[in-house]
Length: 391
Image 1: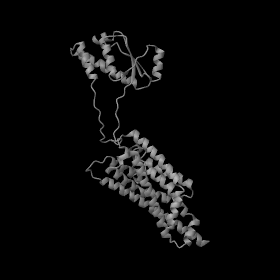
Image 2: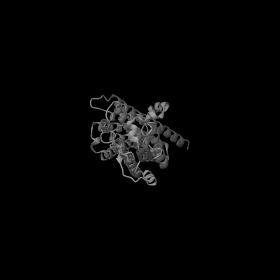
Image 3: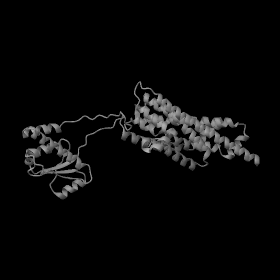
Image 4: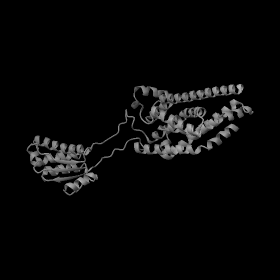
């Protein structure tokens, strides 16, 4: 087991880069998961109240009713009626809107005239003007409606106030939506990028050392057969990859608490180990193709980013366009992301046929990458043997 032990000694020299990648990606996943989802995977809906000031020059029942109507939805702030001071307040966002009710507003509304409007000053180019204009229009239309129906002024104001106090319950319907996910989902969403990067920068240098010509020549002169050397290299790679997956699971457990300790969490872990052969195959191939650690680091970033962008990790595949979306199916990261989506939408009793297919495809991709690596290795061995024979 000398090759197996030596492989680990080389890996320990690069453990700093592996830890750095894990910490960075875990931090990014933690920030995104905390900002885009709560523990139940639903977005938080909160009522937003904007600060506003109002100057009622009419001082009628209708104008007071309007002020009360707007105040039920937003926060009324006392302010001095000076233009420069109000502009400063708007600039500093201490106020977002200034309403000015002109004299005669109540009489014009009672008499059915529409030539008297409420003055409004808001932050230019903002949404606040539409928010407060909508409230003023709603109040005016409600009062005008009840007055036209023959109700008295007091009844019209009361009904308008009751309409303004009604709250509409808001629920989140995630049917057909791909944007509502659990916090655990985001930790495993970026796994292909993380796993490819840490495997290439951690395992790739060890594979690269054993592929150097001087090391290969010494190995051929030793009592170790070539097949045993490759088996021990492969065994060490699988051991390190499994250890990295276990370490990542512990980090996810630390970041999500008991959220990952569920049946869905178990499925996420299975999906993670299904992608592991792909990451190991890429690292094994990169360690044979590239000759320096700098080239391996560059390859880790390029391959990881490329698979993440085209595989629907950083943006949904639907945003890529028809041809790119079809091409994404030839990447293992696509099937990992697709499988994560199936797990996130899983409910008890739902069949998992699609998920098993995704995992099987990922394993096939990993097997294919290892076959390509072995073919490349075989070609290099034949080339070296031919060179030695010529010499």
